[in-house]
Length: 299
Image (cartoon, rainbow, N blue to C red; front, side, top):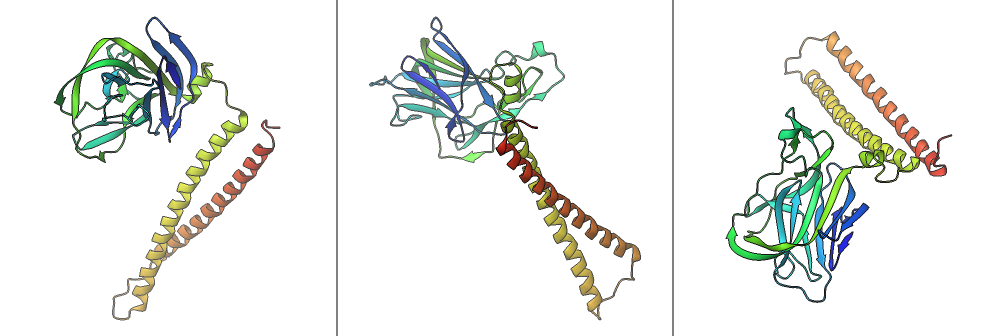
């Protein structure tokens, strides 16, 4: 978590705050900056809390994603804050009844010149600005979609939007900043491997890296088992239909096809071999995981 005066800010994934690294504070600009690890496909929320005893009605927190203003909330109003004076922003509204959550995504590179990509300077940053604001008229809740195509090759992740979610009808109000920000919290997010390579975060222990790799392999194997299950079902259905045709004396029975029988037999053999191989791999993975738990370094 980051803190400046009475304000605290953090980003959460799966309900847990992300750990912050290399925190830097500038009292001259009221800015606190840090690095956080992003994981593609993970939804996240941005939080800001006013820890003072009394909360002013005209203080708000506004979220900027990759340089683009998204939305915010007021500490002293019923909209966007709870009993602990915390603003939580986890989505944007694309209409008055539909929202889409923030999600870390992989950058889709374009062939354009990096100098023409106006978002490059702020790409890879989530910024939270605490300001005095004046509330104006109610406005349209829809916002432009976050940009996921960039020519900047220095980052691997950006922020995209998840699936649409139906919400109660929502009204938003236009705001105008008053004076300079009271606090600016900047979270620079990057892929773990990139942060490790640049020495910003410590290298993971060998066992941790292996465990991450093992989990990915196990997920892929699970998908393979599901595919095998579906293929087996289709093969059984094909064989059953063929048997019913042969058993029905009134129905025309197609001429025997030696080639078709050979194909079916070959498919059955292939499914059996792949299934046995998958089980062998699972057994090897269990042995490797057991070895990793006993020693952190390979022999």
